[in-house]
Amino acid sequence: MGVSPSGRDRLVQLLTSDGVRREHPDFNYDGDLPSVAELYRQMVLVRRVDTEGFALQRHGELGLWPPSLGQEAVLVGGAAALGPTDFVYPTYREMLLGWLLGVSISDLLSVWRGSSHGGWDSHRHRFGPMSIVIGSHPLHATGHALGLAMRGQSDSAVIAYFGDGASSQGDVMEAIELAVLQQVPVVFFCQNNQFAISHPVARQSAVPIVQRADGFGLPGIQIDGNDVLACHAVTQAALKQAREGGGPTLIEAITYRMGPHTTSDDPTRYRDAAEVESWRARDPIDRVRAYLATEGWEPAFFDDVDREAEALGESVRAACLAIPEPDLAAWFDNVYAEQTGELRSQQAEYVAWRQQYGGVA
Image 1 (cartoon, rainbow, N blue to C red):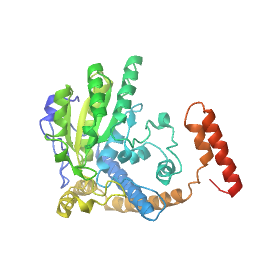
Image 2 (image 1 turned 60 degrees about the vertical axis):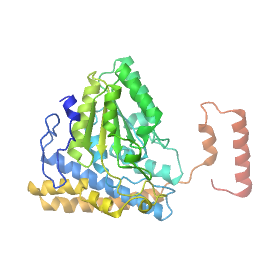
Image 3 (image 1 turned 120 degrees about the vertical axis):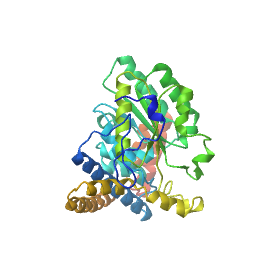
Image 4 (image 1 turned 135 degrees about the vertical axis):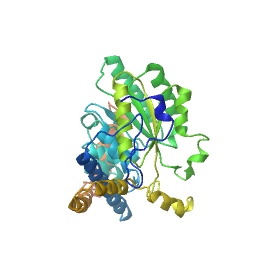
């Protein structure tokens, strides 16, 4: 199932807000009912990790937390769509997609606790460092994909996630332009959650972001970003097309950031409560639960998932509190591949100060 021009004619939705399956001429979710149940389970668990991270920040255990509340369908659908050698370039909003790919929760939490810059093995987990600089990493993704093409690795593709605000950055435009010219195996996935911090998308783009694909000459598909089946089907098709030499695709997922931009943000200052409630009715988890219930899925399953989620929340809390304090002296070793004399001097000065005053870090 390829990515065809008709895929951008209308929003791709395979599961409505009420939990009703829909057909689409170009995209279809081909998983069975147990597979849908597993997607539901993963979304519930991702949300539980997210809410626990938010609570830990509010209790002073984390310096910051970027919530993904309401955007779980993109994360879970995307993780399930990846091939065994595909690689992800994320922003902070896709942090928990990394957890789905096997990155330990301790490694992710340590970034926000200030204990590391991200200590996971990117190659092993196929998940790059979280990009805090807005819009910089699609260039990395295109470069990675260009390398795959030059080596003739036709079994791999790359996907770069970014937000609606990042779509206005020049780096993103340059990455797409080069990817199209070189026809490299990369997918550009825009999570349009309606706000670039406090700026609504209407102040960033006069037309839907997906329409920019026409100007660059690549397929563009707009999907219901709260529909995990659509997220999976379209991401899977775009990655497959990229691997098979079909070049890049731009996906725009229409979703909504139910929480603040980060825990340092107060969204009540710039958006209306009624708007938030209207999006709450489109919740990605509720619609899958409604669909499973309609299909006669065992009610005990939902209770089991809820219990698993609560246990997970406790383990996340314990993992956070168990993160050791960083050895700040070691951070001097990681600035350059070969440490400079000036840094060696600064490192020695710091170590001497720590020894003199009994500092533990």
